Length: 223
Image (cartoon, rainbow, N blue to C red; front, top):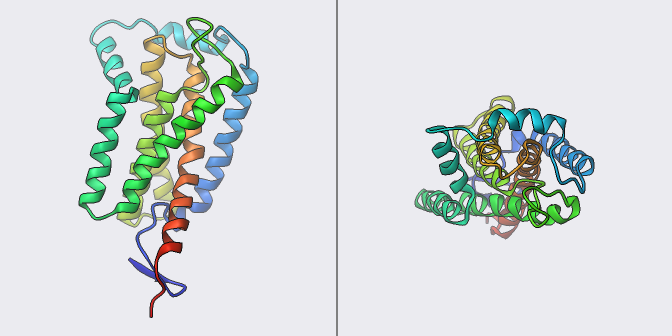
């Protein structure tokens, strides 16, 4: 807890030293989502890159098929609820309610944005009713990992470079894992998962910044 401009502030969920770099990442990620959305708008099949990657990843045998399905479950309502409940409970136990809000709001907003974007992109897979871009499962796990990384970076007092590297590595690893699972199970094209990952990279830093601003504004000034 620190004192800034006469106000008592709890630990920020978006470390101040990382704000500029993550803002740049969020802008770039937004551009990637927009670019891919325009490129594949209205498509009902894979692009050339999707076909090459999908051919290598789709229909894997045991034990990889079981790993892919288990990973996919983490993005389903049941699996997501387990992750969010465990994360929020851990934050509350550590007396970090602001962190608990980020762990719930960040992934929730990321998934919500993918649902808003899917009808706009109108890309389908496995039938006209299955909107594909961007991947909500990939957005969820990427957002959850990114939120955890931001909290860890703040807790460890990491600098702008090391903190940003930690955040991007954690988000990319989670996004790659869920992205692979979505392609392996035939639920998404590879570019859908890139769009989902980038959606999380754009949404979570913005959500963290808003949470900090609202929480700091509600704290009483120091007398």
